[in-house]
Length: 110
Image (tube, rainbow, N blue to C red; front, side, top):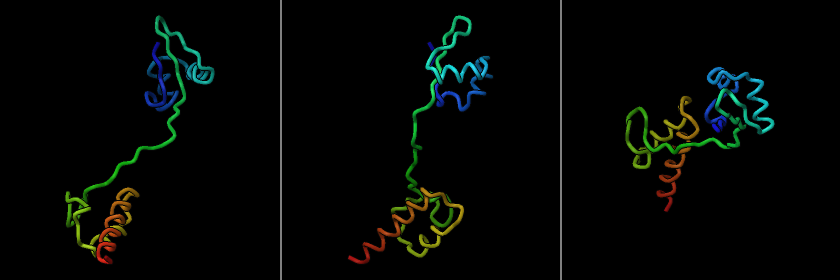
């Protein structure tokens, strides 16, 4: 029996189109935890139980003066403070920059 979860198919519609099974049958299979027979093959559909998103840690600058260099090796505090304010940066990148800024400031206070 083939078991399909959301990781295999992003939507019931897509699964139906790819496997030639009506969406209503796929939904029934997932709701009732029962398999569907299609020819000689048996399919079981399940709802995904994943509740968290994987994140990644940013380690290098992606552009600018220090492109491809490790953030943790940068000592240029004014540059880091300017860089972290750029609107196009995602949350993970800003977190890595703020972490480095705090490390530099804490090391100067010791």
